[in-house]
Image (tube, rainbow, N blue to C red; front, side):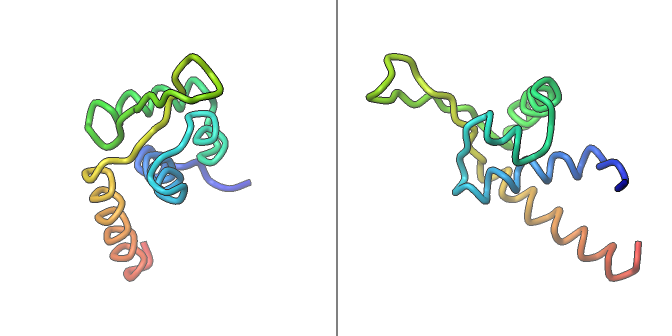
Length: 96
């Protein structure tokens, strides 16, 4: 068994999953891609929305009368990903 992910690694995994899907993803797909429960994903999404790393957009579809929710990464979220990658490279260089 692998080790548990830290809070920052979970946030990184959520944001990278959004980025890999072109910057927007449905919440259910995000739940599977980031390997989190529905409850835990919602907790993290609330925090990410509060910190303006992601936004929720509602898109009306032709097939349905109701809107579909989509999670969209912001510029601030992309900046977090870039800095987290730099930090990870730095710690890896020292074997930490």
